[in-house]
Structures are given as C-alpha cells and as structure tokens.
Image 1 (cartoon, rainbow, N blue to C red):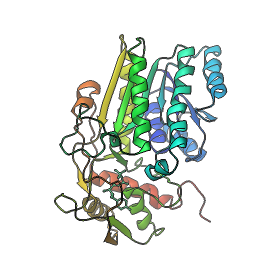
Image 2: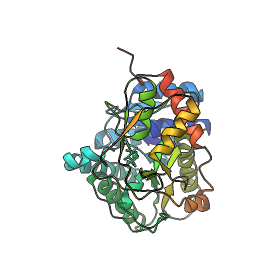
Image 3: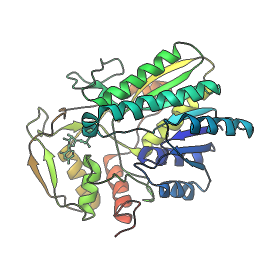
Length: 346
Ligand code: UDP
C-alpha cells in the first residue's frame, strides 16, 4: 500500500479513482482547486470507501503549495511515493478561444508538479491523456503507435505533457504512464458520485442524462452523414469505474517496477458506438425516451475514434468489463438521485 498524491481528485474521473484506491488500501492526499469540481465529491468518496483522505485546496501551478505538500508528507515520515495527475482543463472549444490558459494550466501546471516531485525524489507519475491526440485518424484500430496529430490546443497540451514525460523518463529513474482515455461515461453504481459539468454539457452522455432528469429538452445529434453505419459519429465509450480500476493497476505497476519505465496506453473497450447506439442503449436501460433532432455537424468533430486496448491488457492485465447497459444504468442512478449534481436544487 502506498501514499499517493491525486491532483484533481474531486473531478469526475479522479473521484471514482479515489474510491478504488482507498478500497485497495492506499493513503491519499488530494489536491484540487475545485474550479470545475466540488468538495462534496470528496465527502462522498470517503463515505463510499469508509476511509478518510486528506483534501488540500490549491492550484497545481502553485510551487509553494506543492513544496509544502511534499515536505509535510516527508517530515511526517510518510513521503509521497507516486502521483496520479488529473488536474487540468478539458474543454476543446474553450482551448481554441484561450490557448494560453490551456498551456498554462495543463503544461506549466504539470511542469511545476514534476519539479516538486524531482526535488523530493518522488519519480512515479500516472498522467491523464486523451485519445484526441490522434486527431482525425483514418485507419483503425488505433494503437499507441498510430501517429499523433492533435488538432486543437487541448489535445496539443496533452501531447506536450506526454513528450515532457518521455523526455524525463529518458533521463533515467522515472516511472511514467500516459493513459489515453477514450470516452469515459457512467458513474459509481451507488449513484453517490458522478459527472457534474458546469453549465450546459458539451459531451453526449451528460447531455442525455440531463434530458432524462428534465434539465434539458432535446438532444441535438451533430450530423448523420458521417461515413459510419447509421451516419452518426462513433466513439469508444467506457465505464468510469473501469477507467478508475485502470489507474489503480497503472500506479501499482509503476510502484512495482524495478527499472525506469515510460508507458503510453490506450484505455477504451475497443467497441465503438454511434450517437444513436448510445441514445437507444440509454432508452433500453432506463425506459426513458430521449427526444432528439439531427442538426449540422459540430466543427472539429471526427467521424470515429476507437481504441485498440490490447497494450493495456498486456502490460497492466486490465480490460474494460462493463457494458453500455451498465454505463447507462449507473449514469442514470447518479443523475436521477442528484438532478442538480453536487449543487443543491435552487
Ligand atoms: N454529440 C452529439 N450531440 C451532443 C454532444 C455530442 O451528437 O450534444 C456527438 C458528437 O458529435 C460525437 C459524440 O456525440 O460524435 C461524442 O461527443 P462528446 O462531446 O461526448 O465526445 P468527443 O467528441 O469529445 O469524443
């Protein structure tokens, strides 16, 4: 069991990962600035796991906060052994409007974290990367050696961090894993934690659950003239609990490695689903009809993203186990019990 720092641990993927890590017996420090998350998520993580964690409110770019965190842990005789780094910005359109902000938080934030880690001899890191580093691929399945071609600042910042990590790993003595997430959806089956986007969701799945909860009226399906079987875009959706378990496997793998390591792993199911597959899957799992209309394509969208997840299976012994029905049932358990997310209803 290890003492771990989780940056961005109150967010969607972070909070689910914290539950899995606490249940596995790890000790957690969670650094989050709550700019796009709620401290209530951390209360519920502790309630679900029956264990406590240490929450620290702070910005990952703040060298003084990081220094204090690592120094305090060391002087308490329980130094931080590894970091899982979720903290960052993830809205594609916002990244196009304000690229400097994205480079600052995502790239400079990671650089500040790595400096603090280096100073304190903590050299194991799991990083949240993204399948959008592949850009607009035209041959499938996507393996980790498929050429990258990030087409917006969000993906560019994620790839820049991956490159920073592999450069660091080549100096020796670091163990790093960049996990390229496909489309995480769903929630913890208890419905106590889940995805809680600020404002109107950009992403398909929370948009659907908010329609079901009566917060939104109708889904706009962005294009039905893509070169896919039903014409709507295909993505590789995976259950957030599967993704959380992949992080636990990745950090264990790094901590058990005797040698320096630099890993890049796709995390998906390998089974692409269209927008209409997800709509109909949600309807079948919940009995709720999702009204929709087909509108123009959304600028920047690609027809298809689908992982080859074999490398993660080979290296970590991990593969996604949960079905679309599980994703829909659990996502709805969260949204129906928390129609306003972590906020109190007005
Ligand atoms: N999508 C849609 N309506 C929405 C949101 C998304 O039709 O309101 C489609 C989108 O065009 C894409 C898929 O759903 O084909 C997944 O979009 P999402 O934003 O969730 O993920 P990403 O595009 O970042 O993979």
